[in-house]
Image (cartoon, rainbow, N blue to C red):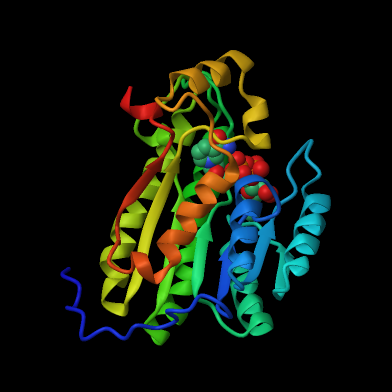
Length: 266
Ligand SMILES: NC(=O)c1ccc[n+]([C@@H]2O[C@H](COP(=O)([O-])OP(=O)(O)OC[C@H]3O[C@@H](n4cnc5c(N)ncnc54)[C@H](O)[C@@H]3O)[C@@H](O)[C@H]2O)c1
């Protein structure tokens, strides 16, 4: 099906301040850095989280909420599993009601459950696909009616360099992030006529708790292999996400911006 041609598009929300961002998995790591970056720009933030085994995500969510409020913006936080359509719809509708609108969606929630593919359980495959791919779909679907109705919205999903150059033992993760990229392109096609930009950011390795599960030598090698010889800090990714949500990036859609310090060019 061919998307209807865009009519003259209204520039909306050129000023980010006072707008509302939804950041999934915003309690920790990359999501927290993205949420804080929005807040520094005066954007109100809704974020969700899911408690993970051996992690204190609930406590981290409280810290993130406090840090966001400290920057003077309004905050809405909910425990919500992105794998559940019902929970996502509830979270998005509550965020809109509490914060008075919806303008940006950042699909950041993600998990990894690594293992050689001949040993990978169906549960590990499903958990990663459901969280990273289905979760992203659930969230885009939840905001789409509002974004279409107001003829404005920015969606950025966090993919990974592993979608292009996978390491060993991450077939589920690489497939899920490749799905995020395919979904990004097709959502850009379908929502373009409604003046909604849909892009993805594909980070290399980023210094967050997610990396602590990888063998130290893998991380060290990646750091040295990158052309810039260093690993990303969460803020390096957050700045690119914010750029894609800004009016300066209004003509960019359906793209994947690789932010990996040159890891995939060497
Ligand atoms: N750290 C890296 O090197 C790296 C590299 C490339 C991409 N990424 C991606 O960046 C994103 C953030 O990862 P991170 O490094 O900050 O790790 P992280 O584990 O700190 O953050 C992931 C967050 O997602 C949330 N989450 C997990 N499953 C969820 C679910 N079903 N519903 C709602 N929330 C859920 C968790 O509560 C957690 O706060 C992920 O999508 C990850 O795949 C990370």
